[in-house]
Amino acid sequence: MTKSGFANALAGAKDDLLFFAFFASFADNDFAETGFYRDTRPMSLLTQAETVALALSFKIALVGVFCSLPVAIGCAWLLARKRFFGKPLFEGLLLLPLILPPVVTGYILLIMFGHHGAIGRWLDAAGLSIAFRWTGAALAAAVMAFPLLVVALRNAFESVDRRLENAAATLGAGAWRIFFSVTLPLSLRGLVAGLALAFARAFGEFGATITFVSSIPGQTRTLPIALYELISTPGGEGGALRLALVAVIVALLAGLIAALMLLRGGERGAGAEA
Amino acid sequence: MIELDLALQRGEFSLELALQSSARALALFGPSGCGKTSTLLAIAGLLRPQRGRIAINDHVLFDSQAGVDVATARRDLGVVFQDARLFPHLTVRENLRYGMPRSAASQAYDDVVQLLQLAALLKRRPGQLSGGQIRRVAIGRALLRQPHALLLDEPLANLHREARVEVLEHLHGLKREFALTTILVSHQPDEVIALADQVARIEDGRLVALEDVETFQASAKPPDAPHLCAAG
Image 1 (tube, one colour):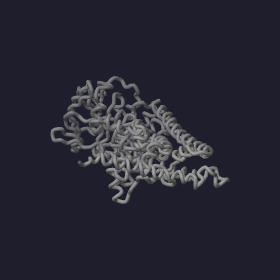
Image 2 (cartoon, chains in turn orange, purple; image 1 turned 180 degrees about the horizontal axis):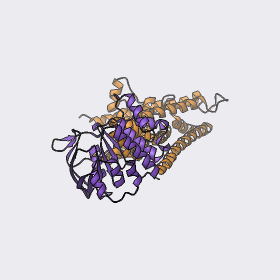
Image 3 (cartoon, helix red, strand yellow; image 1 turned 90 degrees about the horizontal axis):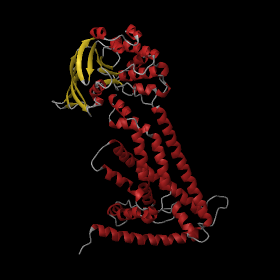
Image 4 (cartoon, one colour; image 1 turned 135 degrees about the horizontal axis):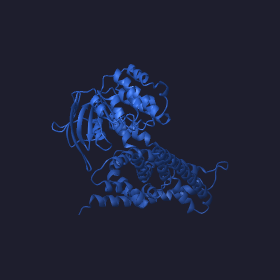
């Protein structure tokens, strides 16, 4: 009796999870050996390991958001401008990462992109493996941030006056030129707001990331994962507090940018109507 | 030569219009909601008729029988919308240049800027312009498309008296300088008398009469703003 492809992927995912447990055990050692919660540089605000986790989170969130941006723009434009069969289902699928428990999303990513996954196997063969690497964490961040980008961009595209796009068409502009010269520039506030929210979401990503790529120092141990591990480590309270503070500051800044963009856009829109 | 034969249904409103005109400036005149703007949008390619034929100066833009429906961007028409529709994020200069063909000589740009007296406005954005200035920029932008015909939708609507005179003077200048076929939509007799050579009266989506502007003027009520006729 032969296993189906899906059963193979599930079995593979189980192997991958064992691999994750193996790495997690290293991670515990790393805490003790690198002094994660022992401040080795008294003059700095964060320990070296905390700084590494913070820098990694920034890198992963930035790469994740910018990789998902072109796809999000395409999907948001389709939702805002086109009618097609199955549109509600398409929209529901796009929003799924926002609704699903993050651990489920991480597990699906593991099944697909793990060493034994349908896509992961192919990536491994091409030497482009992303499982248990920072690129995998960036993929998880991209997937989790994607719905926020789509929602923000869709609203922004819908708020652009279609009559301006029509005017551009009468001036000889084709669909691409209309999009890049009229629609996108007039959606800039929504785009920046969406990027800020998506970045905050990617920066704070935990469940899907730890399920998919585990916690490997310098590779996948992002700020939220480091924070979680500090909480469950005796004597880690100080570090946990510092990282929590950083997370709050990043989230507040992102929220502030988004609010400023959306607020000023709304004020301008109201003025235009008047 | 303007050839229109359209059948267009929008909700409960139906437009059935057929006319041929050799006038250089044809006005579509009628009350609000009679179908004149829908006709203009169909000519521009922004509304698709159910059937019919639209041809201007031997350019066939739409012919349902022959399966012709030229894309809006390739109709080579200059459209001046009632609400101007300048791009708010672009300067006046960028708005003017938006539709200019790459092959267009820079002299054409200079001529239009001079004719419409736009030199002092080039660095401003539409939000910093008056109503009359906005309308002048919209006219300039349409002209720089280098179209084979100009479509004007209520070009003097919602302008105060001084701005109406200002824009009208420029439209007269254009009529002199450019031998462009023009289709004008208006519900104001004085505007039609000042700008058109021939008038198509439209009511409830049907052509009621196609007459010379002199005949139209004789039958029109006294205009609300006599100074516009004087400017013509």
